[in-house]
Structures are given as structure tokens and as C-alpha cells.
Length: 69
Image 1 (cartoon, rainbow, N blue to C red):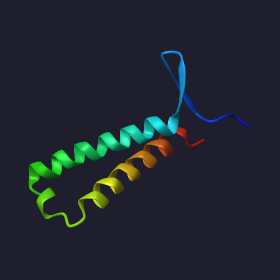
Image 2 (cartoon, helix red, strand yellow; image 1 turned 135 degrees about the vertical axis):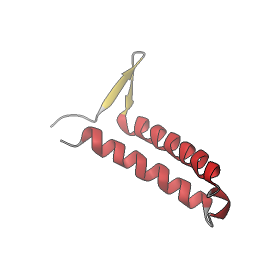
Image 3 (spheres, one colour; image 1 turned 120 degrees about the horizontal axis):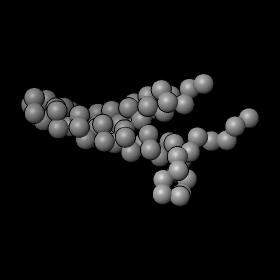
Image 4 (cartoon, one colour; image 1 turned 90 degrees about the horizontal axis):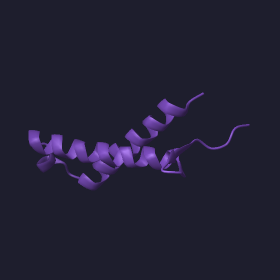
């Protein structure tokens, strides 16, 4: 059995889920910019739920894509 996936960053080890979470948040920020550019942000009824869901789905998809055996 192998250990948890980690990344070495400047000598310190960070869990892979933390990197995927940060990338998911970045994806949600980019999605908000794109939605605002097309005018969709103004008509979203539950913005917090939508952007949180985008971040969660993107983070989980990245984790599964990189670390699935």
C-alpha cells in the first residue's frame, strides 16, 4: 500500500488534495470572469452555490484525473 499523494514544494510536502482544491478555486474564479463577460452572472439565482459547485467539481475531477490508478 502506498502513502497519500504529495508534492514537494521548496522542501516541504503538501497533500495533493490541497493543490487540487486551489486549482478548483482558480477555475471558479475564471468561470465567474467568463460568466460576467457574457452577462450570465447577473441572472444566476444562487451565485454562491453555483461557484462553489464549479470549484468542487473541478477540484475533484483534477484529483481523479491525476491520481486514479
